Image 1 (cartoon, helix red, strand yellow):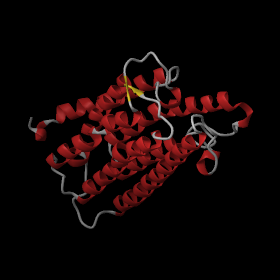
Image 2 (tube, rainbow, N blue to C red):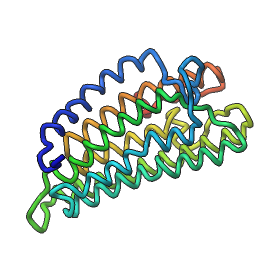
Image 3 (cartoon, rainbow, N blue to C red):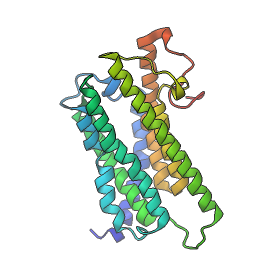
Image 4 (cartoon, rainbow, N blue to C red):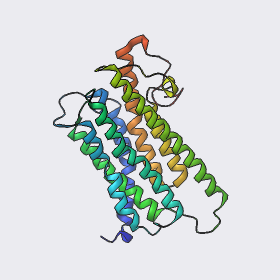
Length: 265
């Protein structure tokens, strides 16, 4: 395939990203994906959680790395910088996080992930990996004058700071949750301290902040579509987590904590 002439395919998949967002949001209002805290039987064969996370997130590394060099803006500094942040997030999500899950599972087994759920996630990452890589390296608009206008620098600085701030919260919150699972020895504890005092899922809040920063940095329809889908997926799951904590711990769990957005949602 000549990837210099894939505009029709790109536009179709970009539109698909927007279409699947409400199609994901609606069922998740009533049904929680059956993995992690919400794991339950009846969803067919399963995979160990570390392996499932590695496999289903992997297109964000291998597919994007294959596609990015094919774009006309592959050598543009802003394109390269934005792509490096994308790879930074997904190197952690695809390799480091599953490795932590694997090491943690030695002391406390992690609930398996249904193959069906992993397959859906893999398919999404194929779609989104293609859209983000092609947007960054071929279809995005970049300033061709130097020095870049002030608004471009403002977007770069603000977007990068939001992205890195969100990533820090995401990683540190995941680390707290894994440590608590190890300490609980088969059960769960109420996470406390830091952003956990304001929301039930600061790890999800951090990831949302990352892709909000991604919008500011890249200023593209592809980034906006990814952000909206992320909220459609993580927002309802965060609310389900909050409900799960309230049911398990009752009045011991702080009622003032929101699900994913402090003081709001």
